[in-house]
Amino acid sequence: MGSEDQSELLRVRRQKLSHLLSAGEEPYKKKFDRTHKISSIVEAYEKLEPGESVNEKVRVAGRILGIRRHGKASFADLRDGTGTIQLYLTLNHLGEERYEDFLNFLDIGDFVGVSGIVFKTRRGELSIQVEEYSLLTKSLRPLPEKWHGLKDIEARYRQRYVDLIVNPEVKEVFETRTKVIKAIREFLDSKDFLEVETPMLQSIPGGASARPFTTYHNALGLNLYLRVAPELYLKRLVVGGLEKVYEINRNFRNEGISYKHNPEFTMLELYEAYVDYNDMMNLTEEMIKFVISKVKGSLKFTYQGKKINFGNDWERLTMLEAITRYTGLDISFDLSLGELKKIAKEKGLVIKPYYGKGKIISEMFEKLVEGKLFQPTFIKDYPLEVSPLARAHPENPSLVERFELIVAGREIANAFSELTDPLEQRKRFQEQLKLLEYGEEEAQRLDEDFIRALEIGLPPTGGLGIGVDRLVMLLTDSHSIREVLLFPHLKPEKT
RNA sequence: GGGCCCGUAGCUCAGUAGGAAGAGCACCGGACUUUUAAUCCGGGUGUCGAAGGUUCGAUUCCUUCCGGGCUCACCA
Image 1 (cartoon, rainbow, N blue to C red):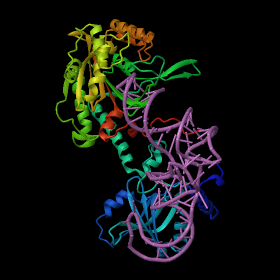
Image 2 (cartoon, chains in turn purple, brown; image 1 turned 135 degrees about the horizontal axis):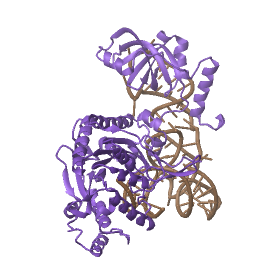
Image 3 (spheres, rainbow, N blue to C red; image 1 turned 180 degrees about the vertical axis):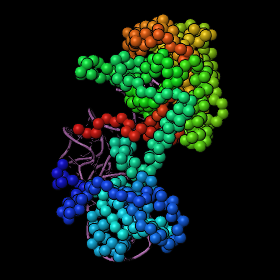
Image 4 (cartoon, chains in turn cyan, brown; image 1 turned 90 degrees about the vertical axis):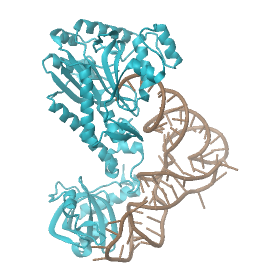
């Protein structure tokens, strides 16, 4: 784009840049030695009396966020990664040329380094009396308005760098996100879990019922899939003797985008040998309580205007109990398939012809009950039909030892006693293959090497997955998953 | 993918029952040596998302497309 096509705002900044260059100024410097971060100046000197100054020269650097001109003296706001401080610039201290240059050629958005004396104005604002300044980076585009910030949701996501500059609460969300992940690691590391990394590129996508992204390896001439879950690899590691493992990393699912779905999202999965899903339930509760206390300082907070209390012992209901309680329907596997379908259709559910009793019951739970569970609730004993990797329930062969943690109507965690019997696992995969034939693209594929690993022997194992983004949504009071992803997926801008 | 809504200046938003495109901030010029959403005086900087259509005339009405939001479906 030539300069004649640009708006006046862009043109003016480029003119200032040209002027600086022709005056021998370097507008993109490589470094600046600081003596202080802004927050350390604020901490050290915030108790100064108005009018008082400190006999110590400081050097700080940051981005100019505001300029207030007052003739022969002016103020500017300077922000670095730790805080904001006011600059006080006067003709007396800088000399006429440097003072005028600051006002004429520097703009809001520019990075500058300054040196000067710390003092407090008579209005009580901690400030730096600037004796020297240096332009570090010239900004060529205006920032959004100081009062309303950047509101346009699309612009905020596409230009997250601007969002982070002008909307301070956005930075806090991502700091919280990092704290959550650190707290998870702290908790699991203290319990001697080993953090590992397993393949993102898989030749058989496994471990979850989801459509995968496909890709191609040129050198090997091989179709590959982006993983939908790390599960089968992590269980191979338990076979290998790593008794407690976890991975926090990205999963990719080729599905729709919504306020709670992004095509790539972050998942915690962990596996522990010699324990079952009841132990996983206890571990989940302990871990999430640890994370929330660490991050929020309290186990009670509000999410989207409603109070959530994580402090009590969380309720544990079987799926069938939950359906009965929240719908009044007396559902069990004793009903015939025909009866279940009839009830489901009366409730407005879409039931495909090949659905069995288990799938219908899980549909009833997900569509009719899940959204009503706001307080943290464990729902346990899922239908076997929808859980091809979980161990059957000893008291009911139609169920498995599996639970999900539901909070604010959403699934936060999913766990089970792992199926360790290789012969049974092969049968389960074969049932999944039938679903693939029915056109259920999310059905799971047969993974012969995983079966071979089970044949080597997987000890009794409990496994757990937690959707990290959704947990962060809860703890940051975010309505949309996009608010907790730095760069949520959007369609490409223009052409 | 379906339904509803949105797209006007760099940003936040008005507006035109179809007839010369507006405000605040930002920006440009001027005044001002302790201001802080500084103030005061002057200046509107625009492909009204894009392309067609209707019309004497379209930013406004219609169609299609692009992008976004909410919601339903699918999923975590």
